[in-house]
Length: 111
Length: 119
Image 1: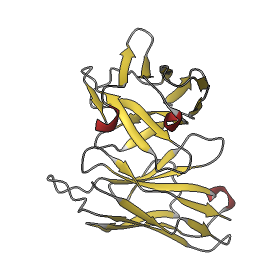
Image 2 (image 1 turned 60 degrees about the vertical axis):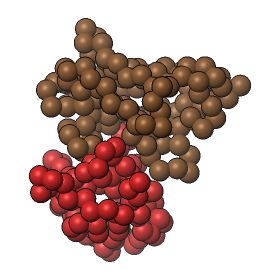
Image 3 (image 1 turned 90 degrees about the vertical axis):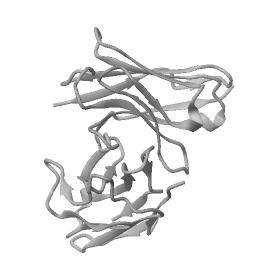
């Protein structure tokens, strides 16, 4: 079975500093159409979860440009440039290349 | 703006059926190219995609839940529903209604509803 491994699981950050979360897949996430179906979600208390990035690096509408995604094949990274207080929460990667879609364990970002 | 709102009992007894509903506003559950489904997040566990229904009414379920899960839709009320039978404590989780734009690229989530399985 495909496994997504996120690290770290807990990430203390300082306001204004950068932060990075890794997501590693046990299998390549390149689909037969050439696309890589890897997304990042943000969960914050009291709010609906939201998608930040899709297909590795495409930012969703309304997502601040301090969020960026990179990587390929099996190794991916979510970077928050200049962390703000509103960024506290849990971040998940999810792959949609192999059925069924599966999530990483999540990374708790603490300011 | 698309909004999804889950509703249902917060407490279900073991061996009974968990039933949740999701009201959708801002889009039709009949929309082409989208899937409407459910994700759950159990305490201390990785979130799990459970199943979905596509624009043609076809259903897709994670193998570990087949036989216990049913996802359906009501086009007249623009709602989707989840039924999970024979629940145990392991089904205690926060359940989210979601829209998937393909390849599990979930682009909208409901706020989630906590369901506890306990006698």
